[in-house]
Amino acid sequence: MSPSALQPFIASVEPLFACEGGRVSVHGRDLWSGEGQPDLTLGHVVVRVAAASPTTLTFRVPHDVEGGTMPVQIGGSEHTAFLNVARRIATGLHQVDSPAFDGEGHLYVTYSGSRGQRVPVSIFRVTRSGARESFSS
Image 1 (cartoon, rainbow, N blue to C red):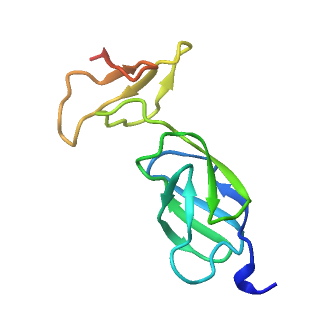
Image 2 (cartoon, rainbow, N blue to C red):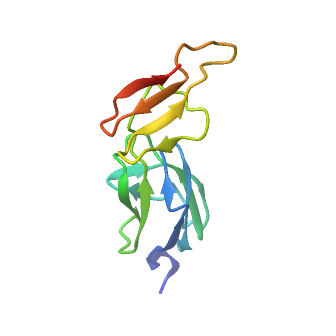
């Protein structure tokens, strides 16, 4: 078989869970021929590869993916791996540390504001629907 006829083979994706902007590595063989940009997709979104070798491709999860368990594919290869992408549930938060969930699925996050800023509310509850509520001050 000639080198140009080799089919890319995905052995694994690392990490298995990521969020938008997160760095992900795809491991396998014959992933890149050494020419041009590899044809890598996450779900139905074409992703830009940041680093490539025949055995590893690295990319950042784009901001326009829906989230959930998404297939990772290279070109016309029949080999597929899966990446679990977090979905955005709220915006306008500058989450500081130690998020927590309660038994009803509410997310509790701390908020400190920018450096030197005093904020009137320091803990928010984010509902399952994504609504942000003041929880504590």
